[in-house]
Amino acid sequence: MSPEQQRILARAAREVLPGHIVNLGIGLPTGLFPYLGSDVLVHSENGVLGCSPRAEGAAPDYDLIDSGGAYIGTVPGASFFDSSVSFAMIRRSRVDITFMGAFEVDEEGNLANWKIPGKFSPGIGGAMELAQKVPRLVVLCSHNDKHGNSKILQRCRLPLTAPRCVSRIITDKAVMDVTPDGLKLIDIAEGLSVDALREATEARLIVDETRLGRF
Image 1 (cartoon, rainbow, N blue to C red):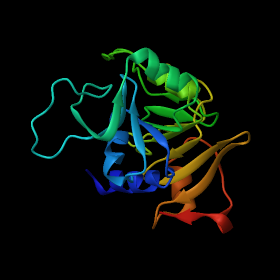
Image 2 (image 1 turned 120 degrees about the horizontal axis):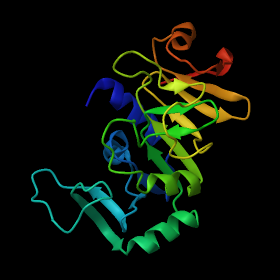
Image 3 (image 1 turned 135 degrees about the vertical axis):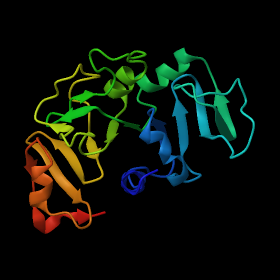
Image 4 (image 1 turned 90 degrees about the vertical axis):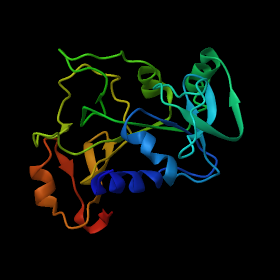
């Protein structure tokens, strides 16, 4: 895992409070496991509450997977249930916070993270429900794609997972909140200037430099 990804995950862990039920999306968000305390329960939409990473070197339990098909472990007291119960938890806002990756996210909090036209996609899956029903959605992603293009846009161009669903965006360069007025800069990466951040970001940023944190 790169230092930039570790920075994202360490900052993201500060969003989780004791007693929270947390859902971790496929990809970078699953890297949050080592950063979470023992007083947090991880939910998987295929019907597990109390997920943990599979112990290093342990043989996989072929009956025990997360919603992305990865082999997992469980914490003491974990529970199992069918997907209808799992999605009832989501729809009744019993999951406190979800972390998802993104291809694109924009000033209005629109999220695109499931489909790039012309490329294979397994489907939108549970992300559509989570994005609409969980009270707080935090996006974790690189600030720019591999070509240097901003993933933080004025308006998403790819097919949406859900509209106006994102609460906070955490990238390797910044932490931004979605507000009625646009994206408000909360924290900026150590050693990065606001001007350099603006150059790397298509979306317009609301900045109060007297109140900026560093991470």
